[in-house]
Image (cartoon, rainbow, N blue to C red; front, side, top):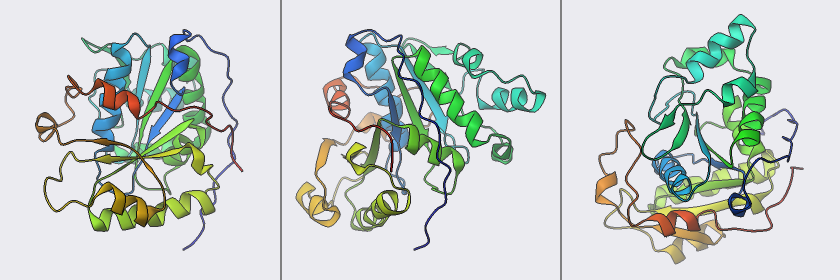
Length: 263
């Protein structure tokens, strides 16, 4: 498998406006998976859960090809216009994010035209995450499955925690196993900041056991998200319901001693 050439991005500042309570969670959390495993719904649900306990949360749609997070006014379309005009200021953008009620999640929606993705370079994408990390307690990024996308590479590189959802299907698990190797060997990501989450959102029967998944991937599963009937027909127009699932969602980010930087 060919290696990927990626730029070395500047790490964001660690200065914080977060409350002491919010520091219990990683500052930047990226959801990524090479397959359809429910990463977007988990990202939106986690944002809702964290906002529900008083954190100031920004949820960002960096899936520039197939955005699914709900759009409410200001988003990456407007960011592209600012970049083209030459007046893009990431700190101003960070304060423009619309707040979705009643969840109180601040959302930066994705592009409506994926062709415009070529106007967003690594510097703009990274500076925007840095600015969001200065203004919000937690930044949650939903990324595209394609590792050749610059937005995906930025999202993985800048993250304090990378959550990789896995559906318990044999072909999905094998596919993810191959990509975990790419992430560690080709992208030089510190795999200690990668957490695997089994998501049963679509698989009801014939699923692999957690033990089987761990044996195939050679890694522990952090948490299992059981099947949720209310999530079956989620279309991204609104944030998903999370009643009764707050503890499971919090457990995805209940971690310590996360590493800094990259090789």
